Length: 167
Image (cartoon, rainbow, N blue to C red; front, side, top):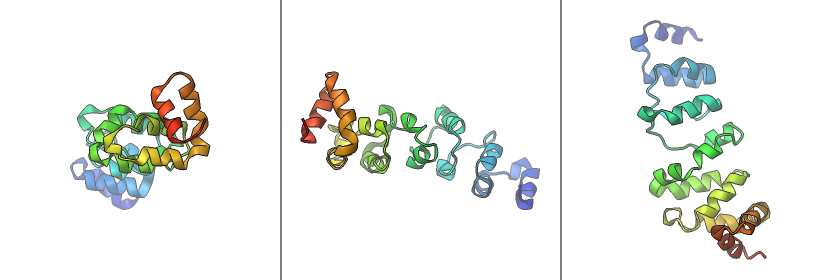
């Protein structure tokens, strides 16, 4: 730990959110581990570089500290491990009018759950036309997953196949 942060950490009352953010910025996951026990977590965007799945899941589950918007960087940094946590219907509903932008961001990841999210969001007014456009543009990647869902009788997947103009 740097001398500056050692000084700041000596007096716990001085270890504020700003200092915690500095620790995170300078020391990554080690800084996160120091800040975690006393942090209010209100500035999750400071945690955008943290790749510790367990730590992030703890943060997401903390009801008293749950004022956050999902960050696509967490999906990327965890190699997709947090995709199931950050693409649930509850998380997507909570985004409201920001949903289309979020879907656009996660649409950059070649993950099966992204295909599922796009199929499920086809009739979502908040998502606008992004899911349909995404499915048309990613036919090569998405077709097998959509076809597998359609074969089980999934009505949304059948609609997605028709939209994708594939048999």
